[in-house]
Length: 302
View (cartoon, rainbow, N blue to C red):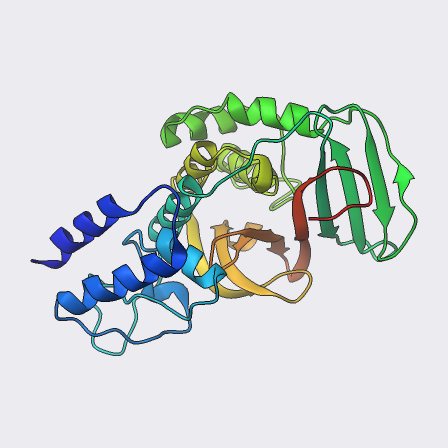
């Protein structure tokens, strides 16, 4: 059996809901049965474009130190090929498709804790009721929780409605995002972007914005979002990119040269959204998501 046949068979067998321990054992047996050896590797470049991400994300979450080598890299022994946006974001899409997003009630709250580029209040926690009726906020760790504005422009109900209306086809979704209002988390090349890149910047910023609502985004829509991001020109991957709070992740980068770079930073183990960063003219702004989820009341955390 060649590499491609093995890949196709294993990908077809991955169940919608993974028993991570059993899946790890099955993958070990499958690779061993094909006469190949496995060795642990510290970085996700060994995962590559093979779709192993959806199984490995579960195994890593369960504490298994397992990384599958790329079978088709074509690189010399001991040397890994650079990651590409197409392979990383396809793996992220596969993980998203097999991630369980529980149903939630209208009276529950979406919780978001962020580190933002504001010196006076670097950490902010927000609770937004899923029906959009109420919000609450806490600025700084351990501060008081205060009532916030009602039905803000970006409340969870509106966000959900917008995401549910997204086309499932990545190309159609990208066209849709290019025509939307601005949703950029951080500006990349303001006040003026290179000619012809304006709609790409808009779409990239919109995807940055929606991905931070991961715990309430349907799996199929999240997968389409990752695939749409891979189709934006000038998007590449940088490894070991630091977040605003000092974590290290995979940077999905919209690189506009001297005009600036915009980063969407993903966890290298499970592709979870960690935050965003923009770099231009030697200056850097970053915002990271420290926690997110659905809870029953303000003050509660996931």
